[in-house]
Image 1 (cartoon, rainbow, N blue to C red):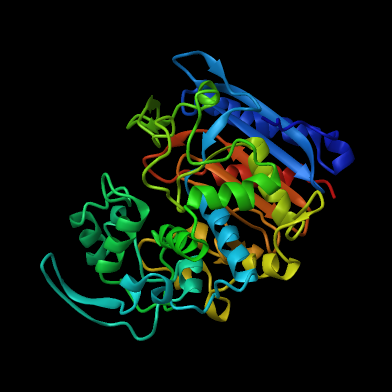
Image 2 (image 1 turned 90 degrees about the horizontal axis):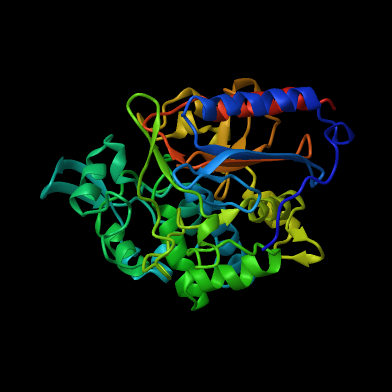
Amino acid sequence: MALLRQEVEPAEAGLDPKALDRLDQHFAHYVDEGRLPGFLVAVSRGGRVAHLTTHGHRDLAAGRPVAPDTLWRIYSMTKPVTAVAALLLVEEGKLALDDPVGRHLPAFAEPRVYVEGSGTDVRTRPAAGPLLIRHLMTHTAGLTFAFYHCHPVDALYREANLESAVLPGSDLARTVDVYASLPLQFDPGTQWNYSVASNVLGRVIEVVSGRPLDEFLAERVFGPLGMTDAGFRVTDAQADRLAELYGETDDGGITPIPGLPLRNGRPRFLSGSGGLAASAHDIHRFMELLRRRGELDGTRLLAPETVDLMTSNHLPDGADLRSFGSRPAHDEPSNDGVGFGLGVSVVIDPSRTRAPAGLGTYGWSGVATTTFWIDPTRDLTVQFMTQVRPKTSHTMFTDLKRLVHEAVTD
């Protein structure tokens, strides 16, 4: 186990201590009001941790406080990790961004696109072109999630028992085959729709590497980076450090809810979309790999050009998530000025973003209100960890970005 620690005083790193105190107090109010159980926030400049705060509890009923070694379900923050794993195979020449997915997963060899109808009365047509690996990594594949309730294909996912994106009792291979049996919402590459694509990418990694996803990540990503707690399961020795998961109630409070079955041994379903747990130290190490463009402590995982490619906008003609997004699911102000790279969002127009952000800032968030981002223009990395699944969208991340922005003095 490795702990994240403060390494430098805020002022030395170009951060205003008073502004950081306002940040801490802002989120402490969420805890005091019963809207969060507790949180961890860390702000770094030039790779050195200049601000680290833990507040509240990781488990309210047990009275266990949030600590630097707390383990968090990072859910969709798993997706950038899966993207890095895929890029390792790209650099080795075993995979290419323009490979048809069907080359590695034959069930996707002849994708079809929804035309009209519902239930068993659905009409489809052949896709205008192949589904490519880059479409998976940019969420332009035409895949979807069951929970959107925005498109008839969303309903087909629900009818296929994919409410939680996994076929109950099944493994990754079988679940991905079910995805492939359903029509795409649109032709690959023509729209952006956040989806189960990273699960498909995880399965591609397994097939191409010949290794289960958990073993590949452990050996090729977590081990070399010193991400000592990251993984798809929590061991008995780690169990007391795992934060309880809470859900938001109708009155704005929180209540314990079931989370990823991390304590039950190796999970049958290895989700490249959202299956990982990690500590703040693990997330810091992963951010440092990206900030340093593929190298950390003398270990190079990716070429600088590969990280640059990952963290550049891949939506066509400078489009952002709102303009290129599959509406109405993505027609929201938080998507203004934000494009998408390979597994991460990328700020392409700071003048249009809902919260202050430097040009080229990239990162991603998880459904349990976890987030990270890297701002290359300020040499700034930030992570925020808690464990609450909200009922609706909230301003928490917008407030966090504003408060961090106010703390930067140079």
